[in-house]
Length: 413
Image (tube, rainbow, N blue to C red):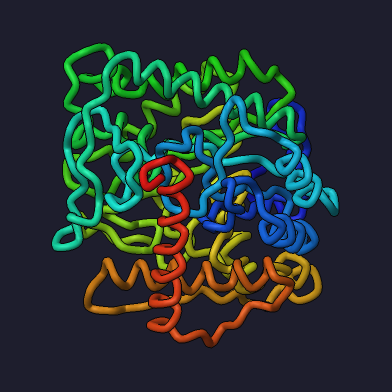
């Protein structure tokens, strides 16, 4: 019975891996790589804190498959030729205390800041529209067939490297408006070749990547997908589309799907939509995930706004196999251990309501990243951080990292 599932019961994934409980540290973008875009000592310390904090699975922040296509400066890059000693050490830190750890592997597509100076690719040459701040993002180029093939191969190469490094698996990021999500969206994908048109053609790049990754890593390695329950934009990828994609995934060897939502244009992952649909106050996507999960033959996870034991258990009782937490674990990395002693313990998530929604989102991310950096230095998180100061400090830091990145890729050499 679904109602008999408990948060602290183990879950066995189709590949045979067992998670010691159903609570997952969901991905957050840390921007904490070293100068060579390898896992830094700070990242390793941060992941050890989460592992010791009691979660059953850690999903990393974005690990980029192409150094020329980054979601932000200071990101980790894992390519076919990347030295993996630092990744082996990272995996060892993250897998302490009986915790499993997987890498979230990603390509940003058109969601690239202009000042980065790398590639901005997309199914079609349609730029991101975030109102008056749109100029901050690069104008994308429509991908050629050989560029699509290259991206598919890069996902495979990165997954193989993750396995060599000792991670338990990978999560292929096909949500939040990044490249694979762009292929899924009828708003972004206007192609007339085999990669565009009807939904199953738009989704074919995801299916190809999944199949080729599975062939390369074998049956005992976790291969997961992060998928939008909806884009929360009028005319975008929606719940019915997610259901159809899941039905196709049922025929492939998927270990679990994480259901989230949104993009830069509609940041539902921060609790805001662009089509006026109301998200749940906690566990933002649960009502949508319930509709979708009914059609899945593999474990399903949802994340977004979870900070209380009661909410996490409600997610499991609603039929999800796992529940993800992100921001709450940036402020209380040992929240899961606390729940074992006191289920009334509540994690903290910052909620800003600035008039400028884009700036509000950036400030929220800055607050969270500030805590990640503190933990990377062995310090405790601070709940009462000033949002404006954190935003300014974060922007200065990211500007410095951007300058280093541009030099690293040879733009400013």
